[in-house]
Length: 83
Image 1 (spheres, rainbow, N blue to C red):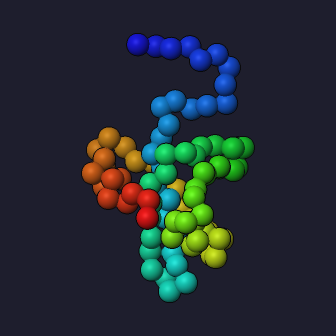
Image 2 (cartoon, helix red, strand yellow):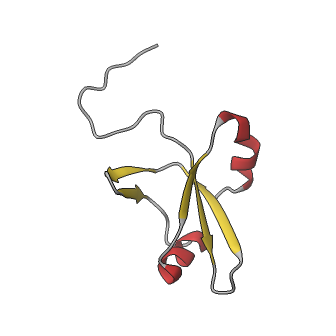
Image 3 (cartoon, rainbow, N blue to C red):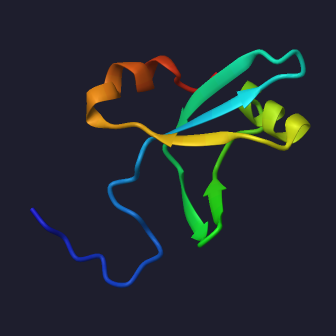
């Protein structure tokens, strides 16, 4: 069923984003993020809780990667649930 929401700054359905980081010891960390998207042509927006290890790593290292989860990798995307 199709639903018209009118003109809104939303994406629907929201993609599942996999955010990858490294901590101060170079140990890799990843989590999935449901609230994120494109902000500008060269920027993204992520809504992350301050309590996540991934958020701490981003703040400390100033770097992260983003990948999109797809239907073929649902199990793997669930494995990297927010910590």
